[in-house]
Image (cartoon, rainbow, N blue to C red):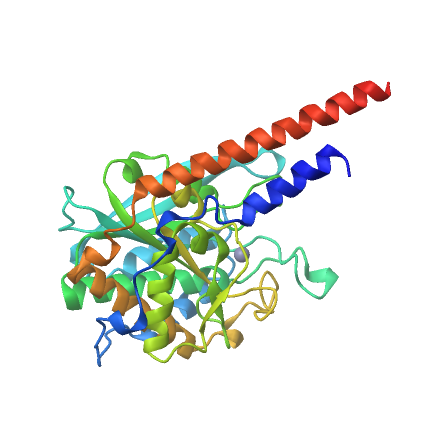
Length: 367
Ligand SMILES: [Zn+2]
């Protein structure tokens, strides 16, 4: 076995090892600690379903489309109570096909009474839909647009309804709702994924005030959805993941929230994790269970109000508990997360560099 192979094996072991796993992974939390004794939930899954329907009725909502303009207006109009919110728009642009300059817009909504001196949490979703249905079983439809009932509209509906519940029924004000543009256009006309969140984390809006944690909702309304512990969330924000999955189980939603390791997914929580803020992704195991993903049949047929209820009630419970007793997150250190990311980058970067040098030497010696 040549030395390159040994280095590759070492990198692979490191990637999945606990050497640099989150220091906070040894959670002191157990299901018996659950404070949630709610027997009543204000999250209205029917309203969330209707907000999905309204977006689907608009049609495709990819960057630069009339549909996405209409969706921006819809999001603003669905913020309730309507006089209690401040909306700001983050504009940036990107070259699309044939040098066309497309403007992208992140939408940031905060309660008017948010205390700018206190930490706050983020509820996140993307509102763009994919331009091409490149996973469609019919090859002739793979350049058709995706309607995004689940992939786009469901996250938006979840975040809007949770925001309403927190503000209207519980007077909780230290949070922001962020709706990202440009999440879902990777590999189309040279675009990358998660453009909106990458822009957001380098803006003053993100950097100016301490953030406790972030929860991203993506594909949260599919029929028979299953939410596994997404790999990146579990690696860098394990305690938050454990907490949410345990509360879901206590509420009887363990048929949705499977306490199993899931895939690692590039999604809008990654740039936030890289900045040292605990962030998790609640996302359906697409591609396996959720067949309509990136096809022309991501429509209302596969949307289930019961899935919205499972995610909505679990999230409502967690967010109210956090807002009334935030101590449970006190042992999550941003420094810890950030340090680990830097350490991880440094070690893997160094090893890959060594590998490159070895390869180069081997090539030279062959000549
Ligand atoms: Zn997608």
